[in-house]
Image 1 (tube, helix red, strand yellow):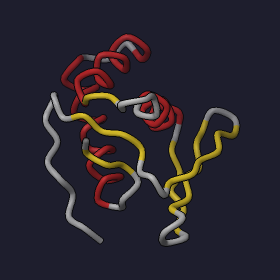
Image 2 (image 1 turned 180 degrees about the vertical axis):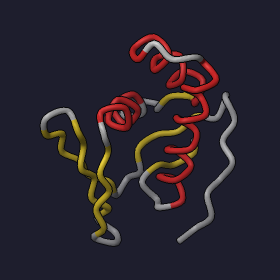
Image 3 (image 1 turned 120 degrees about the horizontal axis):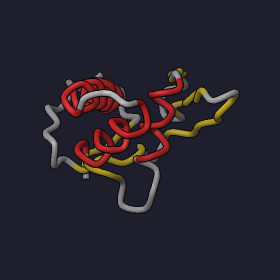
Image 4 (image 1 turned 30 degrees about the horizontal axis):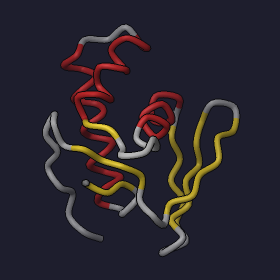
Amino acid sequence: MPSAPALGPGTRVARGVDALHRVLEGEAVIVDLATGTYFGLNEVGTSIWERIGAEGGATVEEVAAALETEYEVSRETAERDARALLERMASRGLVRVL
């Protein structure tokens, strides 16, 4: 498994090319076709996943701004949590840095 890249606020990320997902009752299940492993996301994680799925992905800062509004949390909390999840997913090949 590759090491997790350090992501900054301006880092643009997108879904990995081998990652397929399905959302069930507000939570996503992702399968990595390259390895056959599954990764589950709660509601907040699913929101992050949906935001990076647009053409061209999204920056960590854009994701954090959306989470700040959607979940009424501080920008620092939103950015810290988004960065942690995205780094974890990047280390598993589910997210790619653009």
